[in-house]
Amino acid sequence: MKKNKNGNCQIGEVTQKIELHRCIPWQEWMFLLRLMKRLAIGFSLSIFLIVKGHAQDSLGYYLELAAQNNPAIKASYLEYSAALQKVPQAASLPDPQLQLGYFLKPMELLGGNQIANIQLMQMFPWFGTLRAAKDEASKMAIARFENFRNTRNELFFQVKAAFYKIYQTKKEIAVAEKNLKILKTLEQLALIKFGRGSVGSAGSSGSAMSSPVASVSAGNTTGMNSNSMGSQVTMGSSSMSVASTTLPMQSAESMGSSMNAANKGRLVDLLRVQIEINTLENQIALLRDQLTTDKVSFNRLLNRPPQTDMFTGDTLIETPVPDNLLSLSDSLVNHPMVRMQEAEAQANDAKLIMVTRMGYPMIGAGVNYMLIQPRENNTSMMNGNDMIMPMVSVTLPIYRKKYKAMQQEAIMLREAAIARARETLNNLQLSFQQSLQNLYDASRRINLYKKQAQLADKSVQLLITSFSVSGADFEEVLRMQQQLLDYEFRLIEAVVDKNMATASLIYLTGIE
Image (cartoon, rainbow, N blue to C red):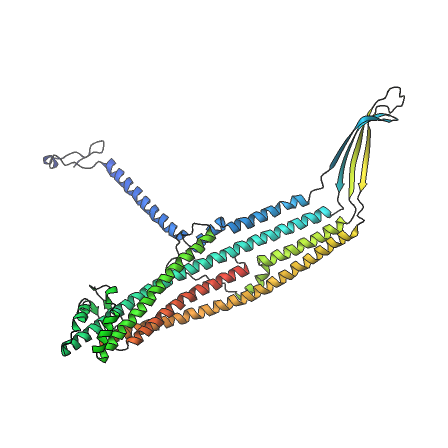
């Protein structure tokens, strides 16, 4: 096959017999390649966006969202911004005073008639007063900033706590649903055991009670696979729903009068597992209601609609704990609450300097301008010349009680701030030790409940296998199954407690 100058294929001698056949030009091949490349890029981009979207549904993403949308954070930051605006106010001089007076009837003077008087005066506080006032306003702004940092850190801690609570509730629902399936498997096993025993006793004694029991057991004889060496029992399909396996109370009482001891025991096993199923179903419903409430609490922190869904993942990643954990207690002095109290103490110290210097005289400098109209028959050289008079004024702070009271107020507020900083540091040290204890305790409980849950799971599987073969120890199966559920719940709680303790340590030490 040959190609022409345009690159199109020419039909040879062999292909001339096939009129509808033609080869694809190379331009079309290039177009197809480019199209496939674009489709591949688009598919990769879609996968990337999906993965990125799931990656955003993480704790870090929610923390960033809370910092942007939470009203408390916005209010605290606005308070800090407002405190910054007080710094130029405190460093400014008092407003100058301008006085203007006009004589309705000109006042006769030696140099003419005065018709108006203009006076301008600027007061200056004592040296260093404005600097101390600016220092006080700056320290109060720092205090508001530390309060903003504490509000942000506290919000992050609350978001983490709400996130972990939702994760715990979701995992508890999943564990409860898994155990509910196991209990329903046990219910089917108990029903089969009870049905076989009832049919056997009815066939030997000719009792009329065989008909209802046989109808119960007929739909559950398929799909049971028991392995004595293994540890798992698999139930197949069943034509009977779970609700239909519950025996009426009157029929159970009527059966009980004609049953032997073995069949009564099997019926008791069936009723016991149904009691456990009802209890677990009620617990799952309670957990689902709790999950709805937890979501409302979480979305409140993010300022989102109450029923907005969120993603926690199947596995809670444990927050890494710094190696120098014990030495972090020294950083408690840098906690925002401690630094806020220290900034307030420094602000009151600057206020003490300011009010002390406010008790000194204020000096004013100004000018007085008198407008003079010339008078007839006045031969004075100053006739009609305006007068300019420089002026100096001084305040006399003779009422000393208010200044002394202002000084005592500043001293008491400074000492109160120092005392609050000391009390806050003591509480932080106690909270740090409690969080450290909770961290160690949670780590121990995680290791313990992992082992206990594994052993309990093996025990349950062995007991189910034994019960499916011999029909014995059903009460022990239920007890061990309940213990396994308790261990799994406690393991989830321990993992959440460890992350909560780590989050508490991060909040207390101020680690970013």
